[in-house]
Length: 180
Image: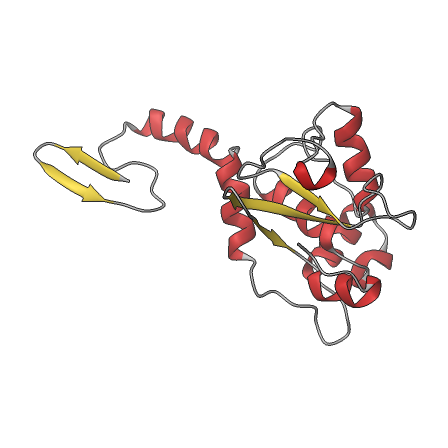
């Protein structure tokens, strides 16, 4: 983004404002920014490289287990908990992205709300947008009816979707399916 102001030009990346904003307006802008799709993408990007602890637990599983008061999740498969953690920290309400540890619950909820759109590979024509959730993998019957994996779309081109995900290695080893 190139911003021109008061006779100078600023090349900026990842900024809130390149000019003066009153504290009241900045507070409102921060609230809006924190609830935007870009915010969940930035939060997810900061988590890149996070791996399970040596005992198999993850920060996402421990966090989710504490939220639901069940330590079962501490070392469970964590792609949906990663998305839930990012949504929670981006102030995305659970009515928008359900706080769940199970991919079929997440996709089923979004489908029931009319917010589940199929891409070309899934039989539809939707182009993913930054901040969207992307569901991949097929169920035991070989259909997309109940996907097995979820991530957060960073951006899409005409040919590819780039997304941030948790638990990728575990997921591919367990299902023998490579992510697209």
